[in-house]
Each structure stands twice: as C-alpha cells, then as structure tokens.
Length: 511
Image: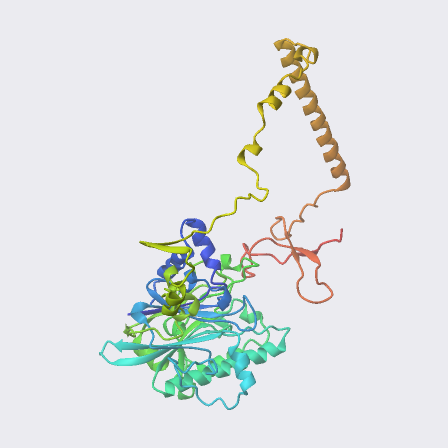
C-alpha cells in the first residue's frame, strides 16, 4: 500500500510549537519527525511552509528516514512555499521545482512540459517565483507486478483577493499552467496525482454557506475545476474529464466534509468551513488503484486539516535521491565536518634548509627530538633600561610602624551604649513607621490614578445570548478602517444553530 497525505501547514514551524512545548527537551528534528510519524504516510506534501532558503534549518530539512524537497518563494520572505517529504522506501527517481521548467536544472528533473506558447517568459517566471509547485516522480508496482511511473504534483494555488482583481487573473493563469503540465505528463505515459490546497470549494456541498454566496456557480475557479474533473453523478460521455476528485469518488454525498476554517471566528469549533484541499488522481489510477480517500480534521496545528489517500500499489525506491533533495544543499551537505580538514600539512622546503644552515659562527644550532632551539653566544646587555625590580613593589617595615603608631579615637566617645531591649524597640518602631509611610503613599497613588483613569467600560451584552461581547477592529481599507466594534463572542456557525454566534453588532463609542 502507498499512502499519500497533503496538509496546508500554515507555517512549517507553527505546528512544531505545540510539540516542543509538550516535550521541551526534544529538538526540532524530533518534533518534525513526530509529526511525520503521526501522519503515517509514504509521501507527505506540505503547503504554505512560509520559509525561505536562508531561514531553513537543518532540523527541518533533514529528517532521519525521509528525503525532503523544498520550493521557496523568491519574492517575499515568510510567504507561500511547498515541501515534500518522502520515506526512504518511496525515494523518487526525479524531483523538480515549479511548473514551467524555468527552474529546472537539467539534472534529475521530471520533464514533460507541454505546449506553453500562450505564456510569455516573464509570466512563467512570475508564476513560478512564489514557490507554489513541486513535482516528485516515483516508480510504483501494481498488484499485477507491473512497474509504472507516478508523478506527484504538490501545489499551493493562489488565493483570489476580492480587492485585488490582478490576483484573480494570476490564479487563473496558474490553474491553466498546472493543467497543461499535468496533461503533458499523462500524455507521456505517467500516472498523475495533483494534491494540495487548490483554494477553491468546488461544489455547494463543499462550502458551509454556498446558498448565500452570490454567483457561486459562476466563479472562474469552479468553472476551471468543472473542466478538469469528471462529474461522477453524470453518465454522459461529455462529462468524462482527465481527473477525479478522490474524496467525492468514495464519499459523493458526505456533508460537512471541510478542510479549512477561520481561526479568527473560531469556526472550527462548529465545523463552519469549506473544502479547499484535494487529492486528485487521473481516472485510470483512481478507479484501478485507489482504496480510500480521507480527511484528518482531528489533526491540529493549522487552519487547515490534512487530507490523503491510500493506493493499492507498492513503491519502488530509487537508489539515489534526486539533486533537489535537501541533503545535497551546500549548507547541509556535511562537508568539512572535522577541524583537521581546515588544516594543511606544510613540508619544509629544501631550499629553505640550505639557506638556513650557513649561520653566523657565533650561533650554534642544537636539534632535539621534536624541538629546535637556537642558542646565541653573543653577550646580553647588562642594562635593565629602567625596569623595576620585584622588591620595589613592597613597603618597608618602617612605614608600616609609623602608620601603626597613629592614635585612633575611642569607640566609647562616639557611640552611646544601649541595652538590648532598647535596640529591639527602636527597630520595631522604625519598621512600623516605614511600612505606614509606604502604605499611605501607595494608597495616595492609587486614588490619584483612579480619579484620572476610569478604567475600561464593561462589555455590552449580545441580544441573542445575553453574554459579554468581544471587541474587534476594522482592518478593511475604507472610511471605517481602525474603528472598534462589539460582536457576539461565540464561534461562527450555521444560522440555524442556537449555540453559534448571533448577529449582534455595535460600534464602539470613541473615548
């Protein structure tokens, strides 16, 4: 069996925080290894790693028992990025970063790019500059004993911001490039799996509030998925497409099967989300080899949950990892491990030996084992050139006696004798007076600040549950940017659920 898992991790270092907190003595390597062990997959694909190459550390890049491959954003730090971890038993025969081929190194690449004449070189560079695609190619063996090629495309598709129409165009061009590359690999005889965060809820059943969204079916991303995926509910030949949504293949009518929730509104508590993460396979691969497709909503650490699939095939590992593997990065390659590698053994030059022998007649060279000492017969100058002797740092006894003969005043003339009872009483009185002064000073200070600062006003109660609200701030650009408002503190959920957030809203009065 071959098990593949995809997870938008929302920062590859974010889920590690909980693991490290639970086991503070463990290093990041053990934490990352524990996450991979919990996912229990032969191929694990992460999206939105939010790590650039300069910030990638060895504990994240090299995990015992796995070989890893990363694609980084080249424009922004802490943005986008994907990574694929393969067990050593599923080592790929080739690995490549990007979809266009412009990032290929011509050594260990996947190939098969298709016809990309509709794109300009600048457009292809822009589409691959955000680290959104990573390909690994594997050899698999079916239950019949046939060896075939499987290409896994790990993708993090762009999000279309409603306020930025250029990002919608960027997203659709990325979709188009992804489809061209996947179909080219299929035409070359390879099976293909597209998995990751596609950033589109395909059907109304995949979104919690599809009925209230205007023009849901007319969304360009959903239309693109209609053209890529076969409609399993229709028997007409016109709806046979090259790929199948594996989860809907096994669970065609499962409601509430969401993979992404808003962390701001606490929507995960009531499962008020959408399904943006997919495992898509070509028709022949899904129908013949897929045994199951699943979600892992209990896996915490991100605003997404992992998704995966199980194939009835076995992996045939490559003998050596492709050059893109993190093991071969210069910063992790393991060269110059010992300090002796930095030292060079110097041999004495014969010319130097000959020139060093005819020294002065007054100089004798005496050689001893492992030592060479040069003794000169020239007399040393007797002058100390003003250097002080050791005795000059000591005082003579006459000075000490003179200082000892000085008369000191009697202690009795300076201090008045007191009884032990007087000393104890004086200390108690002094301590009580200091405590009283400090208490009075503190009370005066508190009363002053209370008169100046009235303190925060009590939170208003929402009308639906009569519970204290929470204060939020408007972050959307516009006339209300920065204003505060009150809303129900409960998590977001379906309007029909009485335990979900009510629609209470109240602007905060300016102070």
